[in-house]
Figure: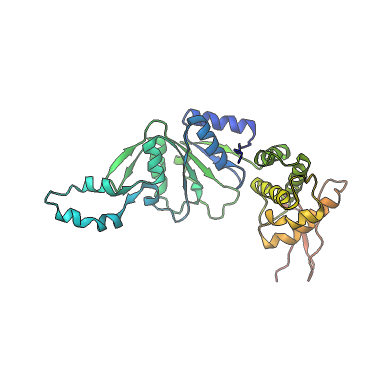
Length: 317
């Protein structure tokens, strides 16, 4: 299996490499599927020589997930050994023996890059001071150990956020943002997305890749519930090749429609994507735009041009 090299705009890639080399903490922001995590992992390993450690943040993430905790089950199971001992118990030493470090603490102790995924989905404000200390002071207090842990040389923090929508996200505190640089990774232009697909599927026909990328980029102009990410463009090309053979140079309308599940992830979008893909493959209009989809059955619809694309709005059932 070949190694996948992330493809980003040159200026974004150079900036990311500079921050990693200088151990400057930064935020990678952009829509889902644009290769933020892949780029962070790849360049961290290329530059530092070690794999980065990742921690995923959700609304349920608690302090113990970030700072580690005592293995209480093991401690209780072995507590009889402590009772039988005549020596005075030193709980500080005892807790050290049963402490299970988190991914973040492991990165600090080993001097590695820590990638914090989707910090803006954090459900607890108490997590921000913890990461603040890691970034600003390279240390943090661990309640389970009742002491501070200082990071080893080489430790750095990269944070990813998906600000494509505000649903389920929180705004990062200004005091926190002031300590970080920020790199925005947009959806790629046509040529960059072609390079992304070929980097993942190097044996794919360039004609096929260009056909699929052009179709996906047109679909992103529509008001879809789920706009296809670059990673899904790769999935579509992969499905076409796996289903119809590696020699496929240009997909037929039927082949595109059969494999549309690679990019259509919402039932509300299916009807409109089927029509849009059919219109694209049937021939591009002189205006270069995808013709509006017909009205739905069961009532009139309304064409909405918001967002640069056209889509028939469904009537409430």
